[in-house]
Length: 75
Image (tube, rainbow, N blue to C red; front, top):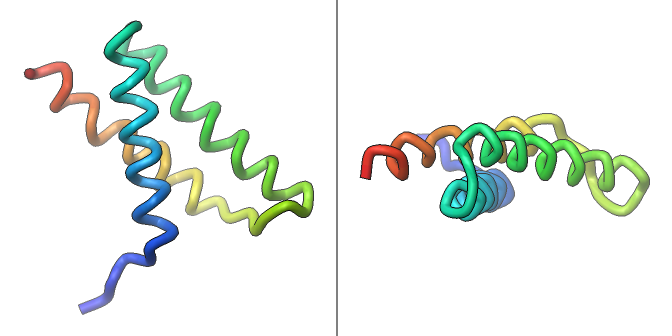
């Protein structure tokens, strides 16, 4: 069985944390927008030479935010 790299796990959890925190104080739409902005912003920062840019990091970060929101909204 393949394992999920720790980097992708961290991005998933970061997206979940961002979306759930913003959703506590605002709307779910703003939570997803914040998650997308953070994910794309991080990859743009990495692209300036301060890290390793990877589009899958952004995808997994956004996925973390979208997976956690239904659980928050239904509870």
